[in-house]
Image 1 (cartoon, one colour):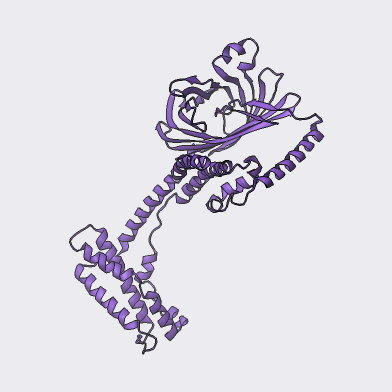
Image 2: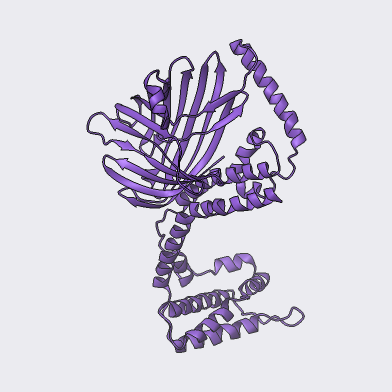
Length: 468
């Protein structure tokens, strides 16, 4: 019962995130739909009220004459051309009534609405078409179809340029990490092992409209434990064979901020740690304003003999194509290097992909100054970044930080983390300082205020961060 209640609480922010991801698509679809309706109305015929009434009586009388019970004589016209005449007058009448209603509400609008509903609800056009084809044949019907008629012009409505497909794909892309979290929560509530399910979690997240109804219904913990044992056994054997070192030991990893996204967390595992989350900023203001969502992940692995491999990656998806950005970093470090590390960054922007390399040092681990800095900071990383290829600056000075949490009141704490990239030359300096507010009872939710800096011009983003 407690697990079900926890899952229901989590569904509220996740549902809001899912809805927000598709808001740009819904707005664009509504805008394009309205413009398409305007273009259609332009070619609709203009009928007076009296003509609408006359045409309505004619159409209904023809339909009444042509829809006769099969046991009686079928009173059809003598030529298939009369079907096309009926269809054209029926279509023109329907469109004329649409135009009448679109011109504004008046005392006759209820009458026109009623006639339009009567004309279009359970329309017998298909039955009449079948009867004509039965009597005259399909070839005769096609041969007598008129060209250059209103039926043709009705199909030639100008296309309205829109961005619906791109925005839908953008929304669907943003929904994938959200649904990944949903499936993780469902697994945790059922006391299943999350990491063992990664091989099914990823395709389930990609195909979540289908997987939502079928996953993880048949997953059993007993089978998970058997699979986990096999994976650990094979992996351990492979590592021992490649690196030649002894049994694994518990690792308590402190993840350092990298690549402009800061995060910290501690996990006790045999060989390493893994985390994931998503940031959502529905409220923004400044020179680069616009709603934004940013899923991210990090990991850290103990390679043995003091070596560690860690990584961090994220995708930023905003209202505009220019705000799309992704970066994935891999870091090599050693416990005896006093905080020194080597980082490789691979990412992409709308202008192209890039590769960068960077030597860095965590000042908290430097003898002498590290102890003083460590009183207030979990990490302070500084270094140089050099471009290998891509549309990035050739050199920049890098600084990132994660502060310790300071208690405020009522279980609330406040902390700051972020990064700055000081570019050499005329390219603008950029950075993302963040202020995070947490509550001890909301272990998986942070309230974030981010300051996206371009030189001294900030864009303020207010939102939340969900994480494991």
